[in-house]
Image (tube, rainbow, N blue to C red; front, side, top):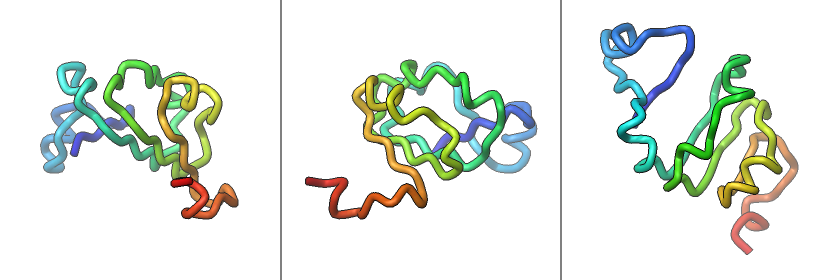
Length: 88
């Protein structure tokens, strides 16, 4: 698991025992979980994650259409979509 947080440097994340997200691993990421509504994530370039299949937007901060246009499945908490509807 890799972590990105604009409020922490890579060294600070390492000190907290997290592995910082680096450009070298972006193509291997298969799922993204957004759990913080930092302004920086509103313009985060998700097209860099060429292997990503699903984005779980825990803050409903991202643009569903933009994510789906990249071929990724968009899921948000509390969006009214039932789980079984996602897999039909």
